[in-house]
Length: 75
Image (cartoon, rainbow, N blue to C red; front, side):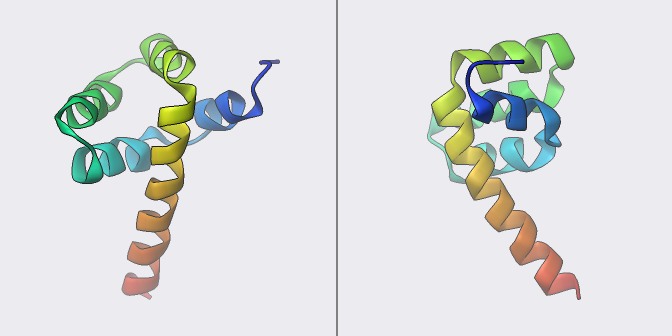
C-alpha cells in the first residue's frame, strides 16, 4: 500500500488518458512526459507517477474529463 492514495489510483488507471491530457494540454515538458508515460513499462510508469504525483494527478483529472467528453460524444 502506498502512502498517497493518488499514487495508488494512478497506478491502477489506464495511462492513455493521463498521457493524452499531458500531450494535448501540457507545456513542452509535460508533452514530452506524456510521450514517455505512453511508452513506459509498468516499472517506469510507477517511477514517473511517484516522482510527479501531484502533477500527474492534475493530468489524470484532466484526462478523465477528456474521456467523459469523448464517451459522451460517441453515444
